[in-house]
View (tube, rainbow, N blue to C red):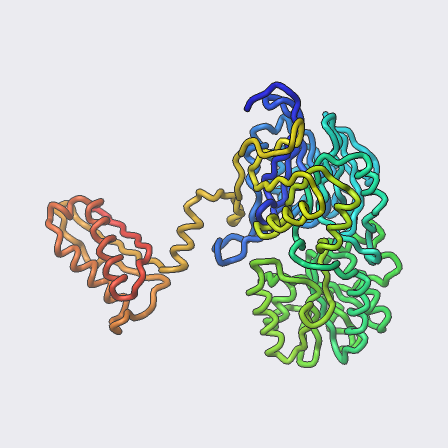
Length: 557
């Protein structure tokens, strides 16, 4: 219903009902004149199975692109790719200033905005604890513990009340690096009165508390100390605390650290600028690896998610120019596979084991912990903040549904179960879904962005399942076939179920179809193409049990 009164609304465009692509809008004002801010602008990983040829996905921001003159600012909670990774790709359609902490700002500049053709993003540094006024919004970053430095929740104050956007967080009293999530800070927000808390759902299905980074550091030190030969550690390149823990363990064991991978190098440089690696020896370059004794080196590698071109995958295939591992060496996966990446990660692990290399994962030792809260931590946050309304985000349907039940069990009066594209009116009145706007995904295909309606993805799925038959036929003006049709098959088996060569099945089908058409019909190129297409699909289906994609071209001379 259209009204002229000021309303406070929440509109998620990504990250609600899915993992990744976080992008949340908050709007204030009458429906026809709202001013907006965005919290985070992240990407997701496509994986190979559902989206062949696609590596990255981004949220469809067309709703706010159409209103970009009213988008006042973009606030980045932290520097993980699922919160910051779409800035370089999509900022040109938004043009709003981006507020981020020093580490996130510097990492964005080093990792994305230094590339050729990158947009000239307006970046402004924000300091946690200091309030920033933007139009009808007053923004304050509240430091939290997470698996990357300078992570923050966002307190959004308006004339209608306070909204707490938690971002990614956990309770870790000994985080190695970065901030401790402050009970006092969140209790103070609760005392102020929180209209709605938009909260992390990632680990709501897990009981207890997430272990501390200090516990991981102790485990890494023990594993490295007891290793007889080389040790390789792979982790998320952005996990500076884990890098520091590895470097401290190596130092204690008299080993040098070699860093390998461009993403790792960029993060290390930014971490040094921000002082996060102070007190540690400099990391050695990949070129130094071959000169270090086998029992005096720890190598930090990119590729924890099975990325085919990353350092670890190349090492596992024994085709890295600088780094090799041999039987008796030890590889630690100080990470967990993001959903969709399990298969490539598993393939690398198998290759390493088959080469006689010992592999340690979080299934066998405490070498990784999540940066998200489990149920006991979430219960504490609800006790501190006491929000009137809870809106679960940052999770798939299972996580959101369980978070909704959990919030009610904590005594929250009202829970809104939103999804991407929902317009949630937070005030005035009881928060509820009042409308839906366009939301979806964009896919990075080579150097271009395509949307979900583009023909490329479904066509590739079909090609991956049933291959392609290509036929070129030359006809003269009388409908006579000139020469032999040119035939090619791609992705079909060599023989059909009866043992007949599949190429013969295709050639015979084309010949029979052309012979069965009258000269008058053969003078109609479209009719010929359709007839051959139908016949081919039928003949191949009979021989194979699948209908391939067919490309039939008639050339008239």
